[in-house]
Length: 113
Image (tube, rainbow, N blue to C red; front, side, top):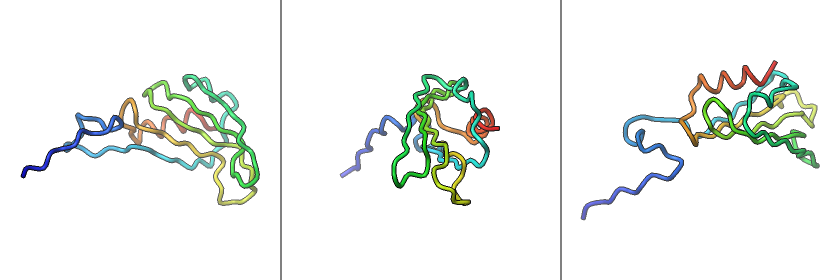
């Protein structure tokens, strides 16, 4: 009996299946300070305080990166004084287009000092 191929999930890009590898999600730990006006680079930013006992960061911003249309999440405002905790964490999801290293570098450059 012939094995049937499953349809790719909505987060998979059909034109890349069985042709190329791509990144579904990138999590970046950033040691630079987040700019005060970084939300000008984002579409529909939603900022929320997330500080509670046990958390590492005090703020979270959910938005869409205007250049790619991909959603992202930024956690910043260190709540712990540990040296190994980065100043910010940026999570980029591949939903509109596959995430590339160039897009990730550009985003970090635009959001940090």
